[in-house]
Length: 361
Image 1: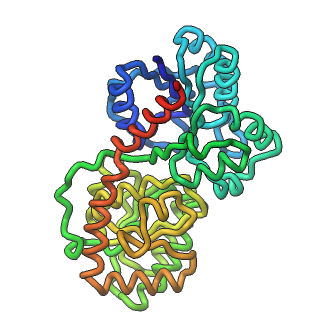
Image 2 (image 1 turned 120 degrees about the vertical axis):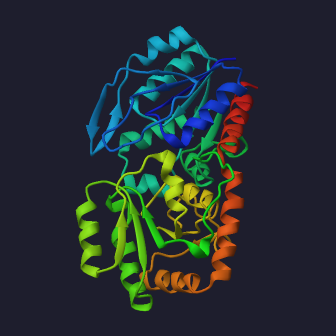
Image 3 (image 1 turned 120 degrees about the horizontal axis):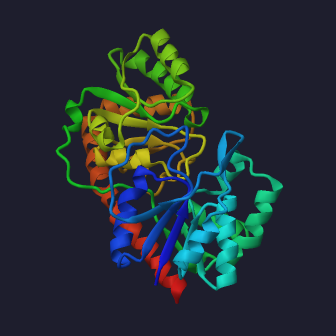
């Protein structure tokens, strides 16, 4: 039983998962990538043993997104002749693979990190919606990065409920010697691409409120992107103490999180938000909103962090309460580092394997 997983580019939060699936499926698992990277990614990935192939990069840019049109996928599928194909996304390359699978009577699994909110904000067009309506109902199983993905599949007519598996974006959760939460150097960490969707202006508005109550607030910032100068200029005008660390290699990011007491993670939309995993592994409680896929799944309100409405005053009030209550801070930190173990790479890989076994039946 040979399984092919077709996706856009390698990502650090899927590498260990692919490795585990590859070994558990007796190495009859091949990951096919449409490209080696994209222009807005600065990931450096460690070498893995799982089998992979890169298509010829035949992408085009449309509204700042890469659209993959790799006709060579057909030749590779003819050569590999898989029993199951997992399609992570619906780019033209994936549609070619879907058609191939239907002709060859190959089982097909749909995989996505999207949900109804992310698709609405993305503004998909009529043709994209029509494709979803036509093909989502014709898959043999479904994989989502969060529980919210199930509603997306069902919205487009899929009878997915008993064939749906959640495979969260994740990392291994090895035991780390994190600095005790009360002794950490930074009160707050901000981490992510400097783009509008990540709501950095909202975070800075919150910080502006916080420094009224806590004059010696210490901030750490990690990230890169087009809004970098805007973000740093706003912080400079506030006169807040901050340390800008730039872009950090994924293998070192958890160490960076382990120096901060709280991670602020507002977002317009995130299919999952793997930064929440990184923070929790470091024992850093996360403050987020319902727009993040990880909200109410990995991040549970008043357990290992907070899930709040996007209101500046509310966020600043709740953050001050936590920073002034070391007992609560320790509770959130401990719960974060324990609970995240349910979302590690082994758990994510297990759900992919379960989807494969269901589809083949």
